[in-house]
Amino acid sequence: MRFLGLVLCVCSWTATCSRDEPREPQEHWNVLCITVDTLRADHLSCYGYAKSTTPRIDAFAEQALRFENASTPRAKTTPALASLFTGLYPHEHGVRDLTEPLAASVPTLAEHLARAGWRTGAVVGNWVLVNERSGLARGFDAWIERLPDTQGVPPHDVPQRTAHSLTDAGLALLGLGPADLADGLREPLARADGAPWFLWLHYMDPHGTYEPPTEHRVFHSAREPIGPPSNDRTHTRRIADYNVPPSALDAAGTIDAAAVRDLYDGEIHYVDAEIGRLLDALAASGALARTLVVITADHGESLGEHDYWFEHGLYAYQSTCRIPLIVRLPDAFPSRPAPGVRRGVVSLVDVAPTLCDVLELPPLVAPDSSSPRGASRAALLAIDDERERAVYFEKVERANEDRTVQTKGVRIGRWKLLRRYTHRDKDGASAWVNLSDELYDLDVDPLEARDLAATPGDAPLERLNAALEHFTAADVHFAELGELLRARREELERTDPEQARKLRALGYF
Image (cartoon, rainbow, N blue to C red):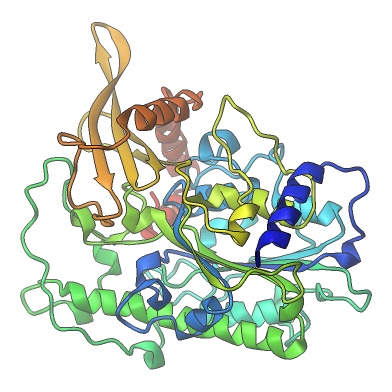
């Protein structure tokens, strides 16, 4: 009975989200969305990691709802965040890589909230999110993209904004700290009239190179040299050497994987402290009690799984596709549920539809049976729901051998199916060829070490295949995508080699 009121409210929101007379904005909650670049869920201590990487987020999660099975649709920053703020998978919002901004015709959550009376602001710490490259500034009253730092991004001249500076800018946007004149902030979001605000902060740490401040280099694991390449025929070994500091190399050049992971964990410890500083200031001001808070990530990081080291974006495995998602409802939220864990499967594409539902706003985009889209998961805030709905993944590779390789994936419940395709000329005509299927039981094999495609057992293959075929069929640019992306990158190399170099330095090109 404790959750009955919220369940009834959720049903009412869903039924009335298109009503003609929405609430006055002064009656609504503030919204704080924190995204952390390259943060894999299983390296947060509140998600079961053995090291205490996130004491501040852990404490926050104890008063919130922690989603155990959240995923990103694409393990690259701009496509993932475009999905977060549109409720659409990449094939619909059109951001398939980091070389094309979100089209002005695609509605965003910031625009939606601004029209409904929210004051909106953002601070982004990643060079690829500058509006010229991302197109994500639409709808924000204040958009801070100044990148004053170079520390931490190879080869040490790709700008970023590190966590301490980013928290300072966020506090200034809320009127809780001094503004840096160089950021061009004219007035804070929070105003005396009580109008609600929406603030998005994107922390660049712990994206490589992993260089936490000295006081956060607190993890010291036993040495773990990277051994010889695996015999996996599907995956060629890839080591992002630019993310390996000299301190993790011995005299023979052997990489100590544990030392690199310790630095990655130190970066998490650093951003955790800065998020804690932000939340402390909000709590002290009284604003936290009136704020709906979402903490999540754009994607994770591969730390050796499938012989892929210290990078992300190449595959669609859990190491890079599983993300943390923690949601705290305001203190006075009607029938506010007790803190706890939610095991229902969710995706970043569900966040915007859920926020619109909870905030009693019309849907950002309408459902479309011809193409999978995000859906409101507001009911999951009240009662855990492990029904087996499908969420999807994709990846585009620049194949080493037979042209572009694309991966499409689907998860239903505990099962995840990945399918890799390549494009070949066959008998004088173009054809897509299925290279391989991979099937994983994530309940017993969360890091996908055992492919069950040849021995599927009781896996719901018919449902998985039907869902995957539906997702692939909805991608109208599927057949030409590889060539389009290759042409776009080659054009960038010709017209703006410096931008191409920076994307390559970030591991994105």
